[in-house]
Image (cartoon, rainbow, N blue to C red; front, side, top):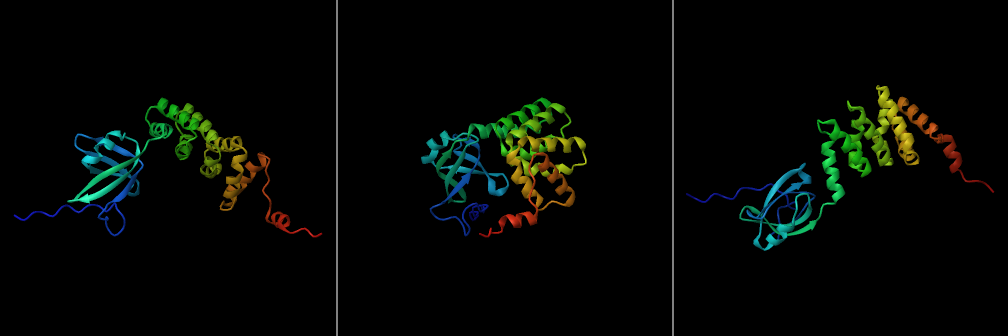
Length: 236
């Protein structure tokens, strides 16, 4: 019986195939480390979070033992006999705050309201920009304490939260609309530029709301005629 050809691997190297001397595989997250089986599992961001298991060369075992789940790493990979073999690792230790934010983002979707409340509070303390959309969604949480923590945290995150809040200025829900208006006003000056940017693509209804918020904050966007006058050179 003839030997079977090695299985064809999903291409994760450079276009045109892996080079003989290998290629660098960059991962933002190590999923599992197993020195006993000489393997490591890593997440592939370019493949929507799918993971790949790599065999580890004997010479790289000491480096493998230094890896921790959650670390980022650049891995030198060579394909040998139908297998991907990790030849070396360059480790990027996980930022403790980033690791904490990852955990809180999961807890913000937890079924227990106390976990959601705590997560919303911590994400604000961390000023975690990735939490903006989930926190905006949490403004409609069934539990008032969760909604309040989301409200407070969006204010702490500040300017980066504004573009996600603007569409809710015309929400059909009175409480949501009022909360969003207050959040933007409390963010203050950092909210002005994203609000002005939103005016460019806003429909008439949203534009009216944005203008009203800016006016209540003490800012009055210039009309096109005023802008042209301001830009015109002064004669001497």
